[in-house]
Length: 121
Image 1: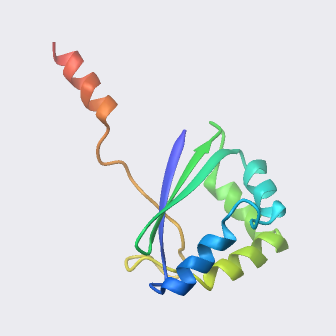
Image 2: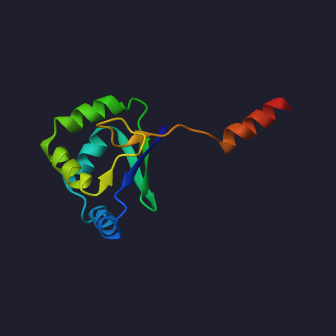
């Protein structure tokens, strides 16, 4: 299963560059990688356009965002990383208080459109 989330960075080129430095493979804390993998995340990518981030997760079928959030909240090292990252991040304008990464909802799928077209034949 693939999940998508969005979040903004502060619109400051120096902060954006520092955020990207922290996310280079050699700079991400091993504890964070272990936490991600331990939650059932098979792969994770973050993309940036301007100051908008999109997080793409490939997860196991039994992945639970709620379980991951609870595990992260109980992990001091993850909380330390999150506090550090919040230096660079800002909530989306329509986020509720306390929300960071917001789930994105699918709008269009080429494979679904092709399947629908095939079913109409």
